[in-house]
Length: 314
Image (cartoon, rainbow, N blue to C red; front, top):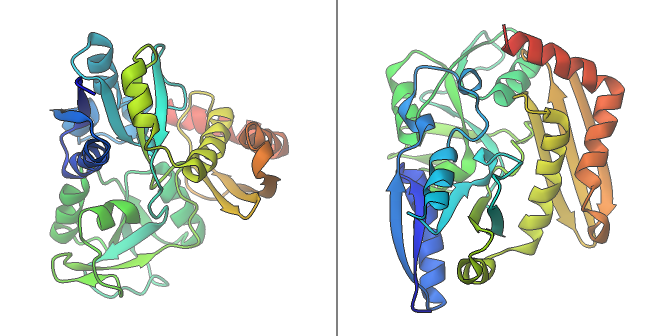
């Protein structure tokens, strides 16, 4: 255990929280670690929607390069930001115990959502599901880390902004049971009806495939339930996506010896919705996400994906 494990991370407050969590867990097992923060292109360019930047890997590419160059040994990511196909030579070594997968609407005042509203989000998935439920609303783009987005919400006349609940919890904005805190400056309501991004709320560790020391060390942090559920969700995404960003939601949850999966694909502005809900035995989960995605594609998803790709590439 003499080797120092250099942990690569984005330098946002949330990414550092995640990396420090992995650092603490590894050190508790007796390993020596060092944080190596870097800035990603996704953090630097805030004036374009993510899908216009070629979203796949925008937050992970810099760390991938650092790992391949040998300046870091492992990287810690929000799993929902990680491309479903990892670069050659890099492998997933651990999925930590999952936090809440919920999305949450944050408002600075009480809002009647039955009235016309303006809602902020940089996510096509959140935009589509919100407009499906509230077609009379307007959705505007919102980029930046959690603190930046909260500040932008306070500075604009929007009625609300959508966040991942896990990020707000990790940064201490939701410490009270009623989801209201003076430091938060707003009121949050969990959106139980909105399917999350695949692997939302999960943290993943990756390493070089030939680094036996780091693989052995970090694999001790793996949570099998989180690994199974995120595998299904990401396989569903990979099969549907075909390299194209789209409004896709997915969530798997284990109940006893079975896994319940819910998945959806929306048109960009939420008018069309395709969904699936199925269960599978825990022992048969490996190709289950792909099977669910193929069913969506067969039932109109192929045409909808072609339409989405055409709209995005205009």
